[in-house]
Amino acid sequence: MRVFWLTILFVSLVCSALFAQQEPQFSHNMFNNMGINPGFAGLRNSICATGLFRQQWAGFKTEEGEKLSPETYSLNVDAPVSLLKGGLALGFLQDKVGFQTAVGVKLGYSYHYLLGYGKLGIGGQVGFIDSRIDFSQFKPINEGDPVLADKDEQSNILLDFALGGFYQSDENAWIGLSVTQLRQANNEIGYANYRNKRHYYLAGGFDYLYPGNNNYVITPSALLKSDFNSYQLDINAMVTYKEIVWGGVSYRLDDAVVFLLGLRLDQISIGYSYDITTSLLGRQGRSWGSHEIMLQYCFNLEFERLNQPYKNVRFL
Image (cartoon, rainbow, N blue to C red; front, side, top):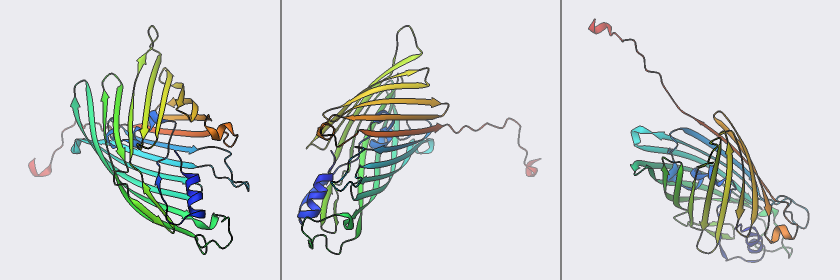
């Protein structure tokens, strides 16, 4: 769902086209609910920070041999806030695709209430995105092309919103529905004009204790992503041993087969995934696959209550 080739074609040859800006994808979807659904904020009853680094299509280069693999950095922090009857979230994102870079910050709030056998979070999010295109890096087919003449790095800032609902059951099952880039903001950078396309996410999964040996937990999950022009489906199955080590495999429809490994050390979780590209890029040998690293840290703030009485000298 990347638009790199559209960007190249447009900036090099066309002055008035409009194309859609897609959101980045991750393979650690089961750890990235906060990144796509503001309703998830604070539902874990812990302060959690989740960082992701993804290098997509390793080995992807121009004909001149320049590296152009998309790279994405993401950091999301969320926490429950009892005074607000919900949770707050703060997120950062940097997404580099070719000669275009987007850097964003997102602020979110989720209202929680008990429902049935679990808790439902309904949340909203506001985001500011600084989009930049380095026109000096493009190589025009025709020398002196006025589209690229005397152009350097140019930028513009976008404002957009997201909404989401996330239900977490007491039996460790979950389902979430969200929509991002609600405003579908238009952006014009130099001669490039594009729109932030609205995205819809449906995610769900559950934990299943292996019969006869509760040391093993099997976690099937799925993520459906769409902008109503294209669809992307990730199906995943993970096995966790003693809540310490996990391994899994995912299939992304018409795109990749993904292998995941991870380790949890007390409050810190570390994961790695490798995507085997099954799309045309992989079959043509232009992609060596995609790498992704996940780092998560969760902790609880607990304060001990003082048992000894406190005396005020005014009331002795």
